[in-house]
Length: 508
Image (cartoon, rainbow, N blue to C red; front, side):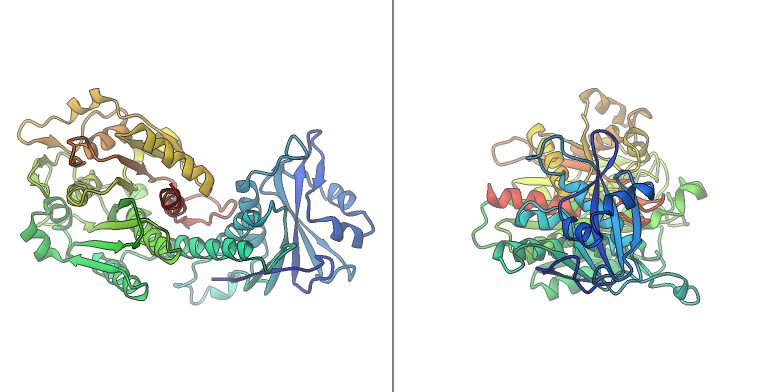
């Protein structure tokens, strides 16, 4: 991870390999210098905007241009990065996500540099957060398995400085520390998702979670295949029985002595999904190492929440299995008994994530949390409905669903509220069991959410526990080109949203 610090300095005199400035797109379509670029412009005799125009700069988001300073500034290179549309009024601020993505673009473009300084628009101490998050998330690379080709790939920027007016204020340092903790968690999820499935089976994932728990002094419980079978976790056992690598269930807990709310986070943890006997086509299987992205997100979000010492209790549940075809694998038409006793007819073994989540939802409900939220790379239908960058949010509580979407926006993640139409439940009726694991072929994301809703427990007053379901199938793994602060491959989806939600609960 890159080192990051705050620095009060003249951007035109700072000693760095490059200084990053912002460029906005004005209402007339021309490029306009963003606040923070004034001293650089003065050092270049007021010709910065003219030079950028000659280079074709428009200020459009994702755009960047290098300018050699030939000794006019302390840094030999200025990188002008597009921020997108300028605010409509002078008093308005840029959207934090514009800043976050621009910082990410800059750090990706400057990979290989030793030291980069950023002088981007800030609005007080909280303005530091999107700059720091974008820079740290943009300065990411996964080179663990590169040997002969390592020299062909540049390492991330080693040191990052954010130029601010008051680098020593407690609020500024707090904002930077928060950004570092969240970025570390997101990047750890990226590493897990990018790890080849040959090196990340349920046991290795559980061992990694145990190491994190020990380092952060958190309670953890790990059930192996014998304990799972003995306790009746039929979903996790059924999905994992076709693999030589047995399943696990991880329960990680953070408690704050003054917490008033408890949130249970559940993440789908299929360390590789072949589809089982309902085998996936090759093109749909080659990125299924990402099918544990939800489990990684809830575990690392809990670690981040603990490191931030937020006044909320969090329990993370990670049901882990490898879905493989073999003579021991579950078959279409098999009936599984989920933890708690409800039976499921398995009509498609590739609809396996909802089976392991069902076990965890019932078990987590027993502890009566105030909120129950799961994240899962659950359906291809999510990509059809919302595309590769927007997660779907469903649930049994409209207020919670709206809170998740709002928290995601503030955290810089794209999520959209989706319904759970009650008429879809009939399509899940089984001829032989309590419920089937697939139903109507239309609205598959909503059908999957409807299935999960059946396993959400009730509060002491008899009402369902407030529950939200995040389908992050597309956003968890970027198969396209890098953009903003998002790399190709694992993205760390949902971590920032979970941390923001926990902050909201802690301050509520």
